[in-house]
Amino acid sequence: MIDQFLPAAPVIVVLVGATIGVILEAAVPRLSRSAVQFAWTMLVLLAALGWTIVNWAAGTETLAAIGSLSLDGPTWVAWTLLLFFGALSALLFGERRVGGGESPFAPNVSAVPSSQAEREAIAARQEHSEVYPLLLFSLGGMMAFVSANDLITMFVALEVLSFPLYVLAGMARRRRLLSQEASLKYFLLGALSSAIFLYGIAMLYGYAGSFHFRDIDIAIQAGVQSQWLLVAGLALVTVGLLFKIGAVPFHGWVPDVYVGSPTAVTAFMAICTKAAAAVATLRLLYVALGALRWDWQSAIAIVAVATMVIGALVGLMQNDVKRMLAYSSVAHAGFILVGVAGAATIENGLAEGRIGSVSSVMFYLAAYGLATVAGFAVLTLIRRSGAEATSFTSWAGLGRRNPLLGILMTIFLLSMAGIPLTGGFIGKVLVFVAAWNGGYAWLVVVAVVASLITAGFYFRLVYVMFGQAPNADVAVVSPGLGTQLVIWIGALGTILLGVVPGPLMDLAINAASFLR
Image (cartoon, rainbow, N blue to C red; front, side):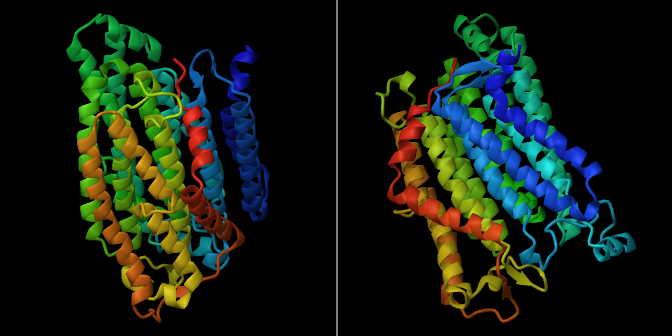
């Protein structure tokens, strides 16, 4: 029996580590708790990441956990990305210096904002170190989500990754009411999307008589039941996944939740949640529902167009940097779906060594994640009266006041815009090539136009930072070591992926086949 679970050790390490983190909350004195939890979380993430890389290097491909998890190339790539960006997010969770020694999280979440209980918690310098186990639980759910080999495992993993995020979204130290509103919106809409996803699972089970992806694929090819039941199930499970990706018209939660959440949590959601949902969508559509490719391809392409266009156009109207990055995230979800819609895989006729949908999406997520996490890290350094200053007027003259920070933020914005010599440019080229190879040339044309539109609000912020006079009411605080690491890793990674993308491309191509 142990042989069934040993290959899945990285996800077990994360979930057991999260459970031990809960025990530490009760066992460690309050004053030492945050430091201990941070150290334990980083140890767990590095251990799981190391184990994942070892398994990936060994070429391990097998079904684990009694067939519930599929450990293949895409799983190892996705787990590596999730653990890497999870570790970067944990560094932002543990940042104290930018807040003047204070945690970015509320001292007492249960206290009414501005109440006596909250003032007492602030005076006592209380902290919610529970954020670290919540981070680990969410990451463990994400890892199970991207590797799920059946619909029940996928649903359970979806809930495990979601509930910690609902809590984390409401824990911001500043603008408490906005944070609580974000948490409530995310919970209500997330619960609705989970119900829709579960209803779709029921319909697919009714059609195939099994929850396993391979059995569903065999049933579809055999045509054993009514096509209406199958199509309805396909539509409902896809809606549940598109909600997590943040695609239009299921994106309504994204701007409010991103703005209201603590910025460290926003950075975590912006890449890890999106990456988990994107890879899970690839696995479900390509493995379980691959025989329906001609039915879902056009629908995904239409959603991609709506997502790119609305994300780009609404993003142009924003005057708040954090909200602009939220709509940027929506637009990037559309670009990811461009690669998904192409369904260009080796199994569909591409020669070995050519870029396909799975490998292009993996590369895109890596490039997008580096720029996004580091961009949100920069955002935490711009302060007014002790709180983050996110309006465009607050960012005026940032490049003049702090040229290095302005240049680094410009690198991240250029990557998001898809400018050459950045990782974002290579990522966009790859998803466009995958869509073109899949016969969706018209979608590539729309994506190029949308990319040009999104460049408008990125360059607008660059102009604000370098072309306007500095705002005297705003301070640029010195980052702690963790935030510095995140920013520099993001900058160096973005440049390296743009200048020498070959090694990561080769890894993505060689790990692009799902285990069936």
